[in-house]
Image (cartoon, rainbow, N blue to C red):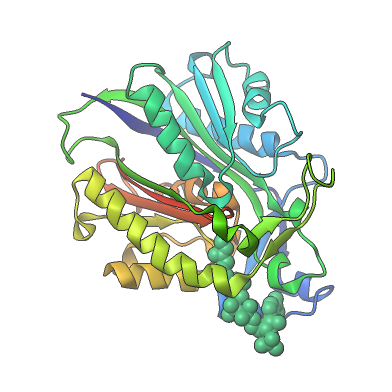
Length: 323
Ligand code: UT7
């Protein structure tokens, strides 16, 4: 059978770093509170002239280089983003133009922080059915543009960045020893919209709006729901949680990462955490953490990975893959 194999990974973080101390100069917060409650020490912020597509292009170039592919070979681009350059066209088509990719398929996926997992599943539908030979799946966000800088409950949590993977078809035997995307569990519950949303939009008030969150409510849902989805994705893949080499979660809060790992019975040494340096980069956080794990030599080809995320909607989901 054809499997969708991740053949290259890349990440990009904008140059400017905002530390907790930097924020404490203009928000009623402290480095101590942010570190204790979230694990975050700093976040990156895109320059005023950098749009989501600029971050995406940087990450995509690195992923293509790692895969040994050129932009000319890319026939599918999916960008998971909640902070697009423009209302339309999709960031994916802007990335296609900037990279110089040929005419192909390009579109965005909007599932907020879960966007990358949703986009991977969507790409799997193309690659595993023989409809794409070289796909780029990107998570790219400029979350700092959605912040209300007077709301200390949210503005300290988010950062900007992008991560990308190249996905290509590969022959598999149809069991869990195959390389590729092995299993998914995607979930959404629109009744929980009020817990996490942006109070602006094209067809409502015509504003970009600001991110609003009932953090402690989201927190409660996160640990329980994510654990269920991770277990379901592992089952879908035919693997057991103890078989997992690396757990690569969406990076929202170190306490959520630890809570989910503990609920799943996963040792914390198997968790890739970048929340301290990157903060929550929404759809970009999983591919950025994956890129970090590969760059520092922990995550290697052939290993079994579990990815998971939860975000506005509420949406959540998980993916089991062998690199
Ligand atoms: O990626 C999308 C998914 N998002 C998440 O997963 C986020 C989930 N939620 C969280 O990570 C946590 O709920 C937060 C980090 C947002 C908040 O932590 P918490 O332990 O749930 O705190 P809380 O909201 O219950 O607030 C506790 C106290 C409050 O003060 P009082 O009412 O007890 O006096 C807040 O006003 O902490 C206060 N507070 C702050 N103090 C200093 C809230 N934000 C801050 C802050 N600095 N930045």
